[in-house]
Amino acid sequence: GFVRIAVDLTDQLRLRQRLAASEQRLAGLVERAADGIVSTDADGRILLFNRGAE
Image (tube, rainbow, N blue to C red):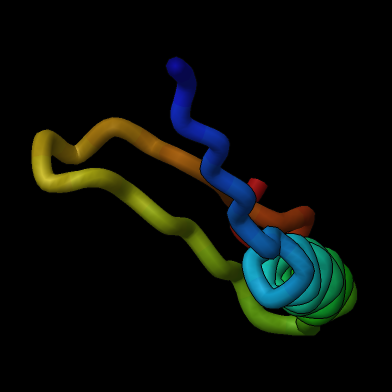
């Protein structure tokens, strides 16, 4: 015999798409900000920065 399992991934795919769109909006806001923005991890490594922070 065998077992058949079906999983609906529609909600998960929608959430991933919404997350990607949100990340793109945030990146655009950070890049266009007049003030310098720097994001670091817990060890102080720079994860991202914008032109104002250069």
